[in-house]
Length: 459
Image 1: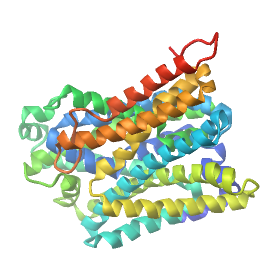
Image 2: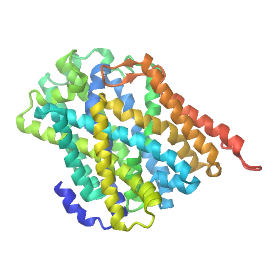
Image 3: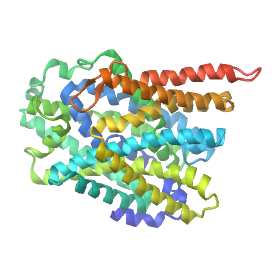
């Protein structure tokens, strides 16, 4: 909150608030990406999933990191050259308001899933440790986050994320090292784990692993909070290096939550609620001073993911809705005010979703799956195949069809999928596979039907 107040002095216009005046360096971007991907929701769900499935649960996160680096190297530079502040604004320039509306709906669904899932993980954490009810914990998390994000905007997000990333990684390593030491060292730790827990594939079916990989790629490709990071850089080179370093850091440190899940299995055996594995490791047997530091790092990590999603929503609601349709002649001050209102409103709405939806990682991922499957192939096609930019019907149809198929298979899949004790689903047919395939197929067929005489196809 203090940082938000201090950094609010840098906010003189809407670009300062939404993209830090385009003056962020590579290290702020890379640490911010790390804090966004590796948050407390990751630790809660990653530890819980690995506690149930073993290290093979890492497949659900593995492809995020490579896709993040690729996005920064090849997509972000193209988007930066357009001068836009949001992805819906880019679609608006290419095709107009109707396409932008569909894109807005998709990114809103995706970001609200991220907001609600992160809020839920944060509230579980605060409620567990402070012994307070869900609603007081919810008000505490929302109150602090809304205040510092509304004051400092993207400047506050980048600075606090950099600090929070370091805190969260330090706390995760501390828990693991102390826990392994208590089990008698690495030999004692490994000896308590069944072979399938340390197998790369474990008991997972190929379809589940393939689905998780596809999910990671398409979600990372259109995660609007990442685009905001790229647009905040002071140069294209800084953006590329920030994403590359961020992807490398995430690939390495993303193993921590899953290692903690294995530590929980070795320490507690079966019978622990997966959502509480991370919390038990934090609270049982650690020195009080270290527990307070770990708790601070965990809450900070939760806010680092939440603030990114809130800034993402504020960006397109301000630029693509308020300025575009409500008040085109708005002053810089009025747009900053609109962005601050959007931050508060989306946080409150996400809190309501978190209150009524019970599962951490599923709340986070359902909206992201719909967004990624429907928009990622379209975005890649627009960036690398210029004729597609003159095919509005194909683009709109592909987004709608992809979203619809993903929603359909999400519903159908939950009727037959195996639930991992409240953490996630082991899909027979992961919804991202048919959803992404439907979007690609719609692009291919539509481009062939819509292309003009003499114009090459999309392939």
